[in-house]
Image 1: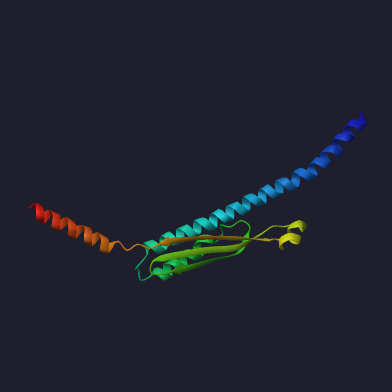
Image 2: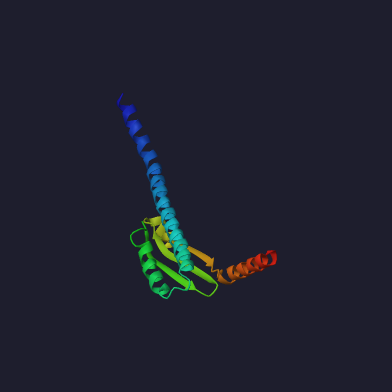
Amino acid sequence: MNRARGSFTVEASLLMTIIIPVLTALIYGSFYLHDSAVMQGAACELAAMAGNLDGDPDQEALLRDKKEELLRGRLLGTGQGSVSLTVTVSEVQVSCEGNFYIPGLVSRLLSQNLVPVEKSWSRKLYHPAETIRRIRGFKALADAAKG
């Protein structure tokens, strides 16, 4: 009777050496995906805001404030996060970068415990004022031709 209980304990201990690292890997994998999604969302939001603020005199100050606010306190395992923003006449490019820390000996041997997280987004800037003026001019010509 005692041998059966001891056998169960040995089998459970052997099984736990497999289950615990797998669960830990799943948890760290979900943290990595979370941080990756947060960085992608921040890049998209910043690009959209830059597109909406096109021509605003306080554009750079507002974008700088928003850039600092977007990632603060939202990343679970990524450290050294940085956001770079490039605004040209026709396009906005935003890139977020950071390093996700994974503890353990195996990850230290393979990648110095750091996995890079890099997300970027770009958005074309449209200046619709001239097109709207042309459409309204054609409409005025059509109305004048009718009447």
